Amino acid sequence: MDVLEKCRAWTAEHRRDAGGDCYYRAISETFDGTEVEFEGARVIMAASHDYLGLSADARVREAAVRAVRRFGTSLGGSRAVSGSLRLHEELENRLAQFLGQEAAAVLPSGYQANLMLAPLLQDGDYVFSDLSNHASLDEVIRLGEAKERKFLHSDVAHLKELLASAASEAGKMILTDGIFSVEGDICVLPEMMKLADAHGAHVVVDSSHDLGVLGPNGAGVADHFGLRPLLVTSALSKSLASVGGVIAGPTEVIRYLRFHARTSMFTAAASPANVAAALAALDILQAEPQRRARVLDLAEQLHNGLRALGYDTGASVTPVVPVLVRGRERCLRMWRELCRAGVFTAPMTYPGVRAGREVLRITLTAGHTDEQLARLLAAFKEVGRREGLIPGTLHEGPAPVRIVRPATLPTTRAAAG
Image 1 (tube, rainbow, N blue to C red):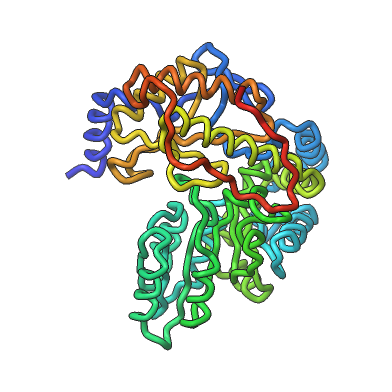
Image 2: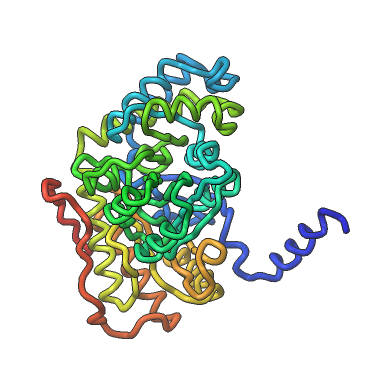
């Protein structure tokens, strides 16, 4: 059989699928990071992970421009050979300190940062991974040689059972997201670290969605719980308003991975513009906690506004707000109707979620206004009633969501109108 036959069959099926046009759709223009031009109309962007609204910040943009003027657009080589700048080292040192670790390595993407873990997973080792982890953590398991053991989402009892069944002398690593990127809930890090200590395992946390959002200092889930896992990874494309990734941990581990992880040795260095933008964003993140307060307040208002309408936002207590829709066709139809009503969301269907658990994922940024939040809720009200997804009157619903926030963080009291 021709190796391309699978492509032809999939393409034919995709063309018959009315929902296939919901993905890889181009945006024509952006406006302050909160609205975009899509298919000739200006709509609210409610699917971006630019949580602190820094991608549109003049200081971040100017930092990127200065770096291009000084170093050019590309370094033309890997970090190991000709691609290392003092700028990379400055960002690595700053991120290591911020994340409470000894050392860090910066990669061109968050996906690559997670793939850096592969050399640690050798034959005879065990790796334990939450079923809801990001695809990049699944990929690192495939690249490594360790025996894989998946535990049910945030199920500590199941993880304990799996750890107990592994050979006591074997190396063991537990992988988890900090904030899960679809469900929006937070990992049970204290319980996992207790189990890790009891079974001689190490914990690795992907903090892509919680860096800049959780913790007294905004350093993510480890900061939130006051704990220190072995390694922390993160994308720089969320709260740090750039493109890239970081892995942070003990100096000896980071040094080993620099020379043994193919994803580091054989890739071009992160561009000067992206590194400089992340550095500027980190400065603002630390100096302006009101941005974090704003996105948390908006998220709480959004959760509770949607629940009052009759929507289910699951177990999330974070700015990742999943609206349960159920049914692929309905989910994609809702996405299209919401676009027509002026709101751009993220439709999550299989394989991103299990069949029957389809959601529209909503994420607002610190840059969104009260008026935009009110318009978003009005669109969900109109479309949801028309589609028969919510009742015609306000809904008592489950208990209000209390967003996770440190006691010292000020509130901005966003109002839905």
